Length: 295
View 1: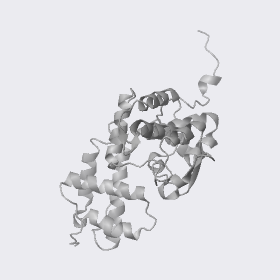
View 2: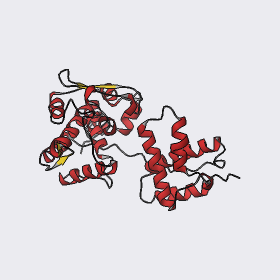
View 3: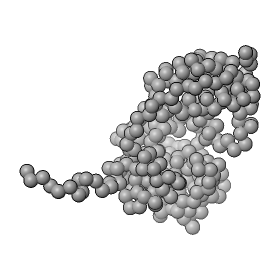
View 4: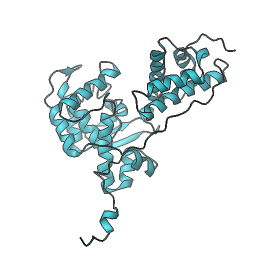
């Protein structure tokens, strides 16, 4: 019988994160989010001793009522990782298998270049400031550089000033912030260079510093998207990813291997299944080769 009064949150920060030397910041944030959602649902900090298949399954069932299957399964993976680690140290009960939710395979959705133009045009009109940067320049440059690089927004926002060379027209996103755990260099178009110049300061560490909380970043961009006349999701966290899919889809229309390199993917299946909007990157189909009917 496990009698530990240690909470899941305490275990994550005091033990799990300390033992995982290669744990990235983005992975830690995902674990923190899963624990926070679990605590919110339970209405108290969940203790390791409380963990059971029924308890976790009830949480995931309730969570699935307002969230997509992929999101629910990501929370399940995070909780199960912590539970298994705690059990291996004798701090939690034996974990049983908690069921996953079957995820429907959706077609990837990107924005067209015309919609990106619409979004950029609206960003030009934004009043106010983000920190000491004009709000219009901040958001417009982020949208433009995301479009030209296809970089994940969390990784792009980690870019340091020293890793961006405007004269040589490249920026480097470091492995610490990449899902591939590898540095990636992006060549910059003239438009991307001009956009970065709007926010660039050699005396600042980050190209795009954000002075507010993480959640406010997503809420702010969702509001900008909606005001531009484009359709947003309920949270706004997938919106920059739609720009990433735009980049990869247009690249794939010319060359699937170019799209894979730009996305940082080793698998063509990953690129095609999750990123290519077929309305942009049409492939050959039966409609191209079948003889016409005599009607």
